[in-house]
Length: 317
Ligand code: BYC
Image (cartoon, rainbow, N blue to C red; front, top):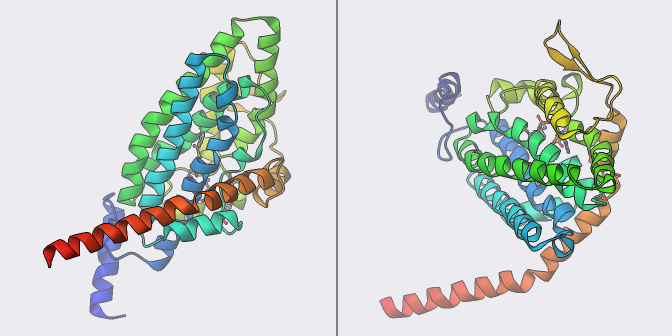
């Protein structure tokens, strides 16, 4: 190791120890860079694929007000994807390459978006549970050690909080409605509860990356810690709403000061992550088609930039 390399490595370690941020031009270990690209790309892809399950309801929203709200939410998700792709670019990743890896299955996106949205209550439950889980996971990421990621997360979390509240407000409206509407909410909760718990990733005993990501302060809590926090936060909200969470083993444990909950079907998470969930093929096919159909826009933007640069060069000459 050269003295210069030793110094840069020490600088990196001091930055982490002092809870400061690693910035794009700083030296970082190759494995830190690779982990950040992996996590940020997966997060960005989740936001973009995550537009699909709710996006299909925009044309069928029950009122103009609900349509405007849903349009804004789905548009926010596109924005989150774009900040995150930009954050990955600061690490040297290429946006086209990340898209190619997503549509060929070489980079992942969150398991949660491989489930179908069967009724409008699913829009509310996604806001409440899926955005709620995302907030639990992402608020600590605002203190993640990689500066551009941590800063992107601040705005994303603010918007996710708004999304969660809109979901809860939609569900409260339905719960005040007819019996059929209340049943629709309960059915959506029954279908989304367990997949929401799986969003936090495999149990700590099976998590490949947690130990190293915690040492680098990329992750601030383990998957199981965040899952527990989500359960504790959600149970009183379910009570206030008047729905039952579909877990007979869910109960307060005064000794632990937490809720106990039933066993998660980890084989389902493995299946969905490996491409065999209810909607994986549909989600990736839709993303691939959008990418191919958008080729002319990218070509036009490149042609315009070249024309503009040539004109500028001509003027300067
Ligand atoms: N789904 O060692 P582990 C949103 C993979 S979008 C799929 O624990 P790590 C929203 C994991 O990648 C929310 N794959 O990994 C958008 C790894 O495989 P690789 C998205 C999963 O990284 C629209 C392997 O399993 N949020 O909020 O330490 C509408 C072993 O796992 C999943 C983020 O992406 C999963 N659920 O921890 C509404 C947050 N879980 O990569 C809402 C940022 C695990 O080695 N990401 N895997 O091939 C993270 O915080 C972490 O990456 C995770 C996983 C907690 C997800």
